[in-house]
Image (cartoon, rainbow over all chains, first blue to last red; front, side):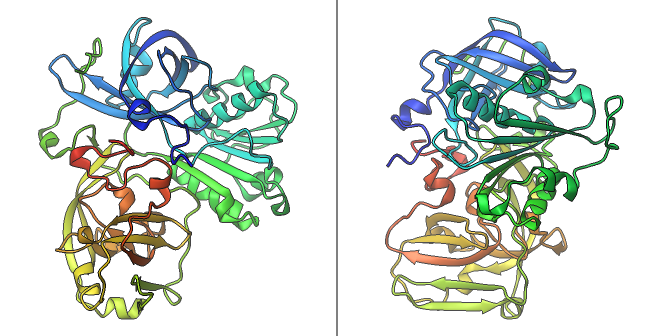
Amino acid sequence: MARAAVSGRLGERLRWRVATLVGQRVETPAARTLVLDVPGWPGHLAGQHVDLRLTAEDGYSTQRSYSIASAPDGASLELTVQRVSEGEVSPYLAQDLLDGDLLELRGPVGGWFVWRPEQSEPILLVAGGSGIVPLMAMIRARRQLGVTTPFRLLYSVRTPEDRMYVDELQAPDPGLEVTFLYTRQVPEDWPRFPSRITEKDMAAVAWPPSMLATSYICGPTAFVEYAADLLVELGQPPDRIRTERFGPTGD
Amino acid sequence: MAIVSRGFQGRRRPSDHRLPPGQYETRDFPVLSAGPTPRVDRDAWRFSVVTEGNERRSWTWSELMALPAEDRVVDLHCVTKWSKFDTPWRGVSLDLLLRDVDTEAEFALVHSYGGYTTNLPLKDLLDGQAWIAYRYDGRDLAPEHGGPARLLVPHLYLWKSAKWVRSLQLSARDEPGFWETAGYHDYGDPWREQRYQGD
């Protein structure tokens, strides 16, 4: 059995590739999706990430990891980058890049926080802020393949304008239930006061423990810690809960 | 040869020479774990070393506390690219814990409460390179950072420093752990940038 999530010779899969920026989409005031063309891209699983390497003219270089937002689609790859003020890399990616610019990347990386289409159990996705990105790749992969596995998404954001992919998430997608939570400011006539996620919120979306669902939680550390604890308290087996924590790393 | 990223300036710092390749410095202490944080009661806590012959040596929490502790200030390097300098820890050296263990094993598979595992050569746990750490920055180690106690092996990428450490299984074979099975490197030297299998 191959140890990596996407098979293929490792030396080939993990070599640095040169990607070309072929398009961009504004997702929120602070987040932008980069559409990349990556010749020879070996494909990926929903939830995996890539390593990006940026190099300045004097040879100074630094790397960051970014989750893949798109479902596997040939040589095309989409990353959504949330700009972190004071960040070294994210402002460059989310503001300064122009179509035609080149980026070095390698991957896909990560074989744990992934959803595989052959998983037949119900899925709960819990996103805090930009933690939606790898979960969106799972939603897109499910739709692309026409899989009927039931998915629920609980998506917590500060304000309505912080929601990414909002049109896509509100479009009909049979078997996908989307719930938004707002922590600072709610839309007009919204029935819930702004607050962080509560046990009641989680109980409304958690699958019954007997269904042996898998839950994926991604977001800032405090959010993930709290959301995972809630799921455990609601009876979800800890080994059915997969987490990916972002920061706080300043970028 | 790396390609230049048009218009990318980057941010150099005086401490950059302390950074392994591909890393950047953070002043925070990020948390990375694969699942929920296990809550481990100190009264029930045990740390065990199990040899290839299945001989087991265990310590309770109070037995661990009774052993001489060392204070160390070390740099941490996480495979997700961040490094954190000058982190202060207190723990018991594995030289002390392994001193009387009779083994010919060359590898250790580390097991954690919650089911996490990671593998490394036994020699990397000796010679003042590894601790069972239970205090960080003058405080009891917080659960999200691996409390009550974690392995600390700072010369390797941080996923080798297993949180919520429970036991060391010594073996003649190098058996891949949790991340290693998912494609991460069996050794994980940050200075040789051994992030993934094949690096």
